[in-house]
Length: 86
Image 1 (cartoon, rainbow, N blue to C red):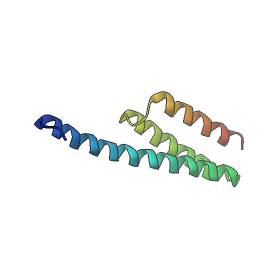
Image 2 (cartoon, helix red, strand yellow; image 1 turned 30 degrees about the vertical axis):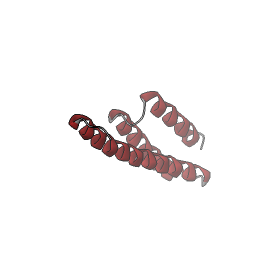
Image 3 (cartoon, helix red, strand yellow; image 1 turned 90 degrees about the vertical axis):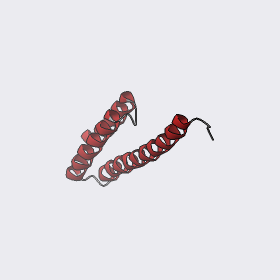
Image 4 (cartoon, rainbow, N blue to C red; image 1 turned 45 degrees about the vertical axis):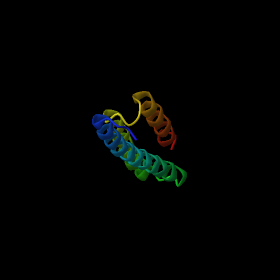
């Protein structure tokens, strides 16, 4: 543990950010999985809705700095291809 007061504070905020980032990443995985399940069940309407929700969440994660913008772009592209193939 650090001796410096400002570093102790940074350690606390870093831990909060880490937990928040893990929560967001977990939700992203769930939303992308929802798109995959809708595509495998061949339900175009559900797939479109799931795609929209996942896209919004990916963009939000980028704006908050949780994931890199290219990572989000690659994920959006991949799930869009699956939905458009229906």
